[in-house]
Image (tube, rainbow, N blue to C red; front, side, top):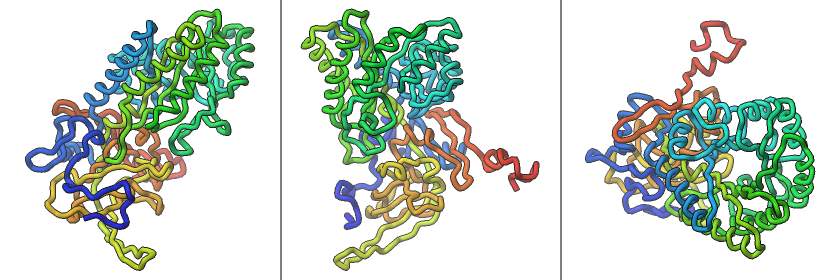
Length: 470
């Protein structure tokens, strides 16, 4: 039954065992025994093999999303006689497996650190299909990127242009660069996810970009090949993208008049469904609308249309992921409302938490949960799935409905955790980061090893040798 403690957007389901379409991976279903199956593999087998907590990535789902996104870019651009590209936003989740899967689909890679660059290169990515960006690239990172032959470096500040020019001159190479533009467009998203506002660390204002472009023209070893914009993350509304594109096309027309075709990289940020209340536009529909808008603005300004690029991350990896936990302490808590009425919220404590999913604590993000090892005929009960960490804000799922008989030992599955969960994972409270596994067509394999307590303590040089695990 519904609870007065539930947020207005979260309704009690008729069946608390059901898997909401669009929230869970494409193959997620229950077998005749009621067990959750992902990619043809039952969760019991996965947990018996790898333990909990456990990140599970459905390979076919991730690949299908990448393939569909790139196809939509290619088709939308071809309709206007230009080419288009897609660069996977590695920050959402990157591993050697993901790199190899996306190479096969024709995507490039957007990396923001030397570590992400290292994984992309080690995984076999063509350096010319890598964009390197970030607001504070070190000299060593820039040297590594230029030495490797990355296709483009996105400049975030004037000082970077001088650093890149000096390194390119030292190495005797010519480096393509873009400038990140702070368009001033306010995306409809969480304050910390909006990355095109005036008072923040990313990019340069439009007047600053124009001035820097003039400086770059005189710098040896640099070629300005385009402009970059990213207005935020987890965006459902199209209007922000269109307004940013309008401003970007106008700036492009000013800076690239009479020059060879350049690139407009309009970033990513396409939202996904985490709960049944989320209704994002399909990324493919958003891409088509944005590309059409760029074409209209280019025609209005009487300029040739630029090459168009996008950087999807969450839209590819997010829905393909599920995290599995084991339930421990179950605790009903009576809550007295302002009117004196009393309601019960059941706290379900699991063996992970904010160390493997920091997004609820960082952004107030919401997720969906289900009992994964069985189905139940019990009525739905409002629960809060919480972690084991010593923080009251250690919440995995703030509000959802599970069968009222949820019990210690149940497996709890949380959907849409393929993006920004492993990437943000930590060793808070001296816990190891969970392993990541792939599932597909009834098989599974290890993508990233988990960390044991011995692994975590083994880095502490103040502990006696051989005693860190005791």
